[in-house]
Length: 240
Image 1 (cartoon, rainbow, N blue to C red):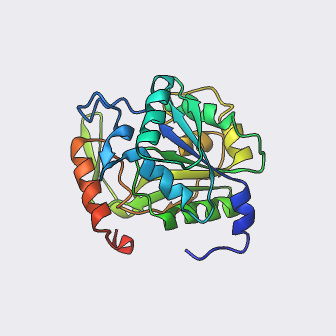
Image 2 (cartoon, one colour; image 1 turned 60 degrees about the vertical axis):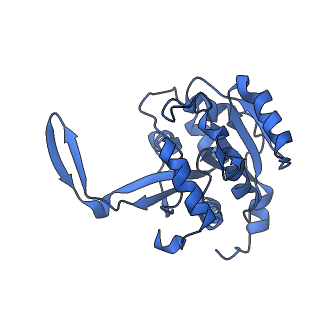
């Protein structure tokens, strides 16, 4: 993506909150998935590098359970990982973890991307687009069109949904700080599934931007193998 004329101004106010709250249960592993190795390096390091290497070079905040702070520091030493970042304690839920991250940002004019720690393959052009569009429109939610036919099951009845109207939401989800901060002043609700749902509840229109099918979330054991293949032999993201 071409650099916009105000990219330097955005960069000065850009932040990335990377949420790493996984426990490893669905990975059948005692080690949280953000620490599993992807081509020889912990998953979360790949995620951080993508943001660090973006045009907007954001200040990086890692939300991590307090019990894993020392382990993460040990991994950084082992892998000689020196990208600057701030560690913040995770909360009871993702909502509370993001709120903890927001509380550390004192710049009311900031542009804040919230990213899953276990999305290590987010293309840099997608990150750039999210910051640029959020700066222009207040928010930018990365999403891709569904490739599959979709059916909704409700009260035992299966109903076809139009695939062209269905988008699969990813991260980053990027917002102007004032908008995001106001949304997170709302009481927690267990229907909040991501930052977009929190902001939408506050009455703000959500803007979608095109993501990539390569931007997979590491959730199950086979996802590591898929991510390793994609990373070793990058695919044409325009086809994804």
